[in-house]
Image 1 (cartoon, rainbow, N blue to C red):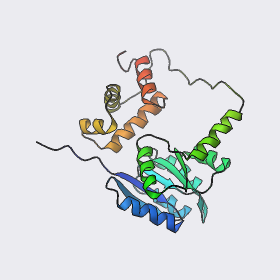
Image 2 (tube, one colour; image 1 turned 90 degrees about the vertical axis):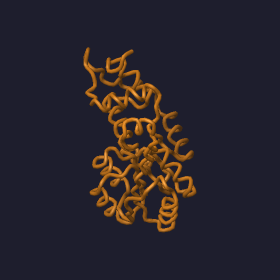
Image 3 (tube, rainbow, N blue to C red; image 1 turned 135 degrees about the vertical axis):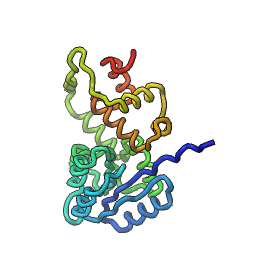
Image 4 (cartoon, helix red, strand yellow; image 1 turned 45 degrees about the vertical axis):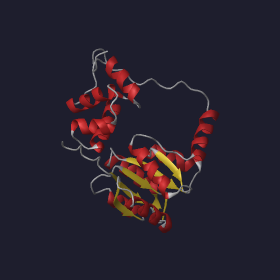
Length: 229
């Protein structure tokens, strides 16, 4: 009986100038069979240069780099590696840095108060579609929105009558499997592709349907007639 292929490792790029923290992360990744370090940079310039290679699945970025801000690297990565999930790992916990990082394209924001082993868990969570945020940062964001005046959000533009999002055949196949409750790992095995490829399809589906979750994707696909109701 043929054994199923093992899931592809999570490819990580690291931009970090703190040697102790850098070494701790590198050592932890080296001991983890499901995570692989693809590139290591210590400056803003090196971080931007690393974006010229094949895209990583997860990019870890410090903000206080010796030759500039890591936010520049986040912004460039968001444009050049659109399928890569970006997480900030920094000592800066002020509101300005947090909001600028999120606006630049970061999906996670962690302060440097976590053990390297815990960082591996957060990398897996980010790659799986989560948004790891340090409790202090999460509280800060909640307090900001609580203090802001309540304004009704602008409605997303609705598709014209009878119009459907232009999903490819493979994206529709992934969407149908999602509807049936299969996980990303199970979908990868069924379609005989890597888990990274499945995550890429999922991100494209969410973008084309203008949604942020599986439940919203299923509802919107049925509403547009892409899936049977």
